[in-house]
Length: 221
Image 1 (cartoon, helix red, strand yellow):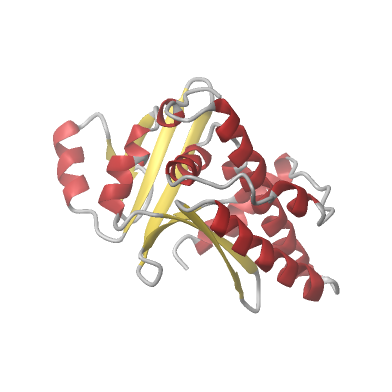
Image 2 (tube, rainbow, N blue to C red):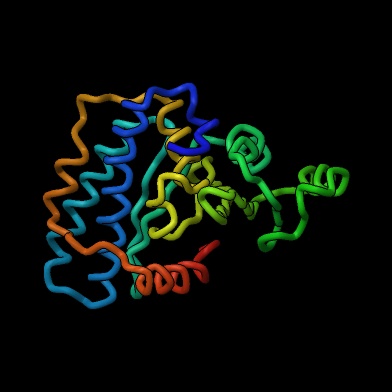
């Protein structure tokens, strides 16, 4: 994995194990949301099955948590990591991803890292949310947003499926860091069970853009 400084303390085997589990969970959640928008008839079977798998995933990985929420319009899969506030989140993980370019309080790219003094002052002013931008010659641009979930007392990673399923993205690497840092149980099987949903669709470039457009307005819901 390129640029995996934040994951260097973990074995390639553990990273690969989490990658298979996590990406399959995100893929299935995204596909259920797609079905949800189309009012597919088998959702009454798919959603309870997925919710049970979420429970198993959360038992397996202590440092990360998946939540599902149903509304009248969509099926939202949230990803949370075990940090109390955005400052700790940034210091312990997000700032350790190479290619850090800028951060924001209400949107991306409000303060560039090149202005060290302004950047430091801005960090001190952060409260309940943060928007972070990265740029890497090898993997291109990447963004991540995070917001405090006061009920869970965790940090929600705001994402779109297309980007977080890229193993070099900031979002995936941050999630892997917390999942592996908290330890996990290989005895709990996730990937095989998630594969039984039978979703074969992989997002093509047009669909990826549609996911960006659909998920961006939901950033802080």
